[in-house]
Image 1 (cartoon, rainbow, N blue to C red):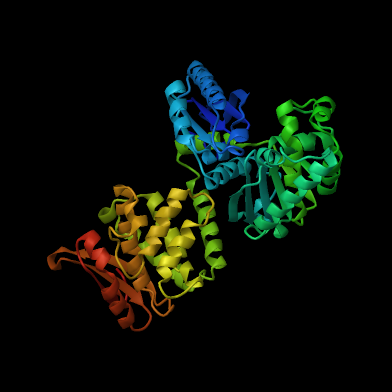
Image 2: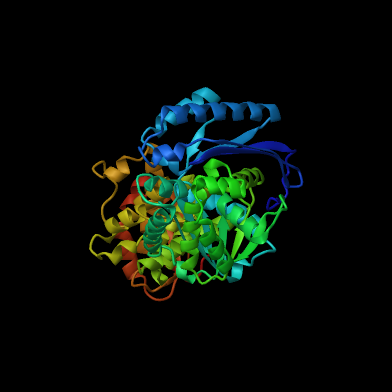
Length: 525
């Protein structure tokens, strides 16, 4: 596996740990000076966290002790290899458990490993990183409508890419362990139980179709051990090093029909699966089949990548500092798709976005923020008017809860919360202590929201009547007159923009210490 660019550091040893629904897995790798990643060791230990979380809602003492012991053993392995950096993540099972905080604390005290609970958006981002590297030369992402599907123990991560850009992405409560646990109390023979399971999955997939355009996918990329198992069986593939398989959807459906006839004992004997694998393979493949049947694709690309591969590549990419712009483009494409969904993806928001970026870049010495905050402002500018879908009255408030309730590829729930607050204050009232979503933020986050919302308000004020009147601008600090001046090249009269700025620049004045006025010029020097 190759990193996007060459690292300038000496070789480092890194590790990725995935605390999943049915197992805890770790991969230790070496990042070489030429940018390549060489795997040193893969470890896996079955732990039934998902079985607990999806039935009782909390992790059992037995599972917690097993998980903590496993992480302690992994910690010793990392010390043996001299791991300098690692990232350990937990997904749906720990995310949904009521006692997750207690588990994370005990795991850290026992092993010294800090496990981070990530949301579905981060799972999708890490998975995309691994896919991007894996499919180069095998599948043209830039000229296809691609569905990326990974059915895990507790949830399914699904993304829709159009011409290489991630337009829709989500995590859904459709998982092999979850589906199996739901059938524990169901009576009947294997055929009846599978029929009930299939019906449940179909209902969930129909719900997913309202969010992800499954029917537009003309290529499918499938991840996960269950799909790798199916691909090997269908193709009679024995090469242990192979990482990409292409199977016909008709052949996959035929294999699913065949395997559904067998109970757990039969699957263990016939295919050499472990009992843990045999318990979940049928629910998992039924999920994949129902999702694939909604699409137009006639074949399925099965990849041997996983979230740990994405973690390792992400760690290496951070070391090099290269590749960030690729994922920023993905995030913005997803934001634009969300804006279009609420009929807000028009010329106005693009102009507000452009003006916001000009102001942000020219005011670096005033706000002291970086590239991550710039991206948050850009997304907020694209989404600030989505609330008009509900009502033009108080649409800034509607925008806030729409954004908070939405997912954007590559952005965490905390990122979306910041963006929602920034969009909330693009008009009308200023942030106050009576606004619970704002005051619940940490102090540093409140300052980020205020600084960025102040810029967004000014940019929105400068785009009146959806005219795209202002072609270019320059902001100047005039200390002798104790003010900022925005010099603007514009087509036509800017009286409306000047009046709007006077009414909306109060937050800017409070945050940056000086009022701001608009001055029209023929040409910016």
